[in-house]
Image (cartoon, rainbow, N blue to C red; front, side, top):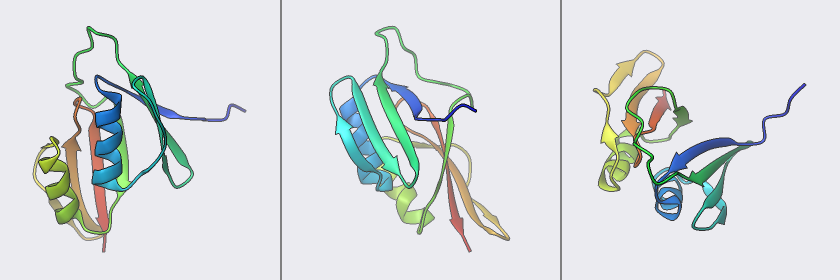
Length: 115
């Protein structure tokens, strides 16, 4: 059986992306250099890697990370102020609020606030 060590996302500016995930979602930064960062979210390690110079932001749903948050509205407000874009409306489901945002390089982030 294989063991998943990291979930890795390519970013043009790794330190800026690390700050986005730390300040916006509260992930713990374990390592951050110009080319690589490791952030902890519970048992999951998110790796941020320097993208090649010809990297274009993702415009589809191929990269998708989902986060549970305590306060969806304040989290979205914070992320938007840091450069994220809301991707569709906030949905109010029976089990909680759901939203999707695109982070700095276009990666999709799902946000969920349980009831």
